[in-house]
Length: 178
Image (cartoon, rainbow, N blue to C red; front, side):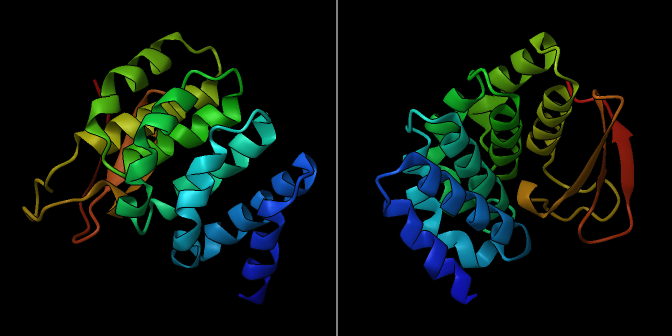
């Protein structure tokens, strides 16, 4: 945990590589401790405007991971994440798909659908499928409990089919989101 503050200080560096590396370490930490990186979501959103693609990529990594526990903290980045879907950097697009899906950004469905249909990058196609799947959920057909996108476990098969699991019961299913 002490490393978070150290690497967060790197975000103020003038040199792009130092900022990118600081964001990369914070993104790695966000995978295990997303709730601890929540306070850095506004700063990560600002980095989506950076000219350096590695900086943008690492910022989307942080936002996608924070969205798993605090989608409301990522919501102010919705427009910037939607724009990130069209950048020419597949890893950034992939993270944007997951972030938008996890935070329940229903307005992004058309962009996710277009990206899924038009990209030739299978990982991005799979991430767009996952994002669409997350946005299509509202309640579990078995237990009837309300499902929030950030609560759901999703796995993608064949780049266009997604398996999701209810966080409340043992229900799971494989579907092809429209």
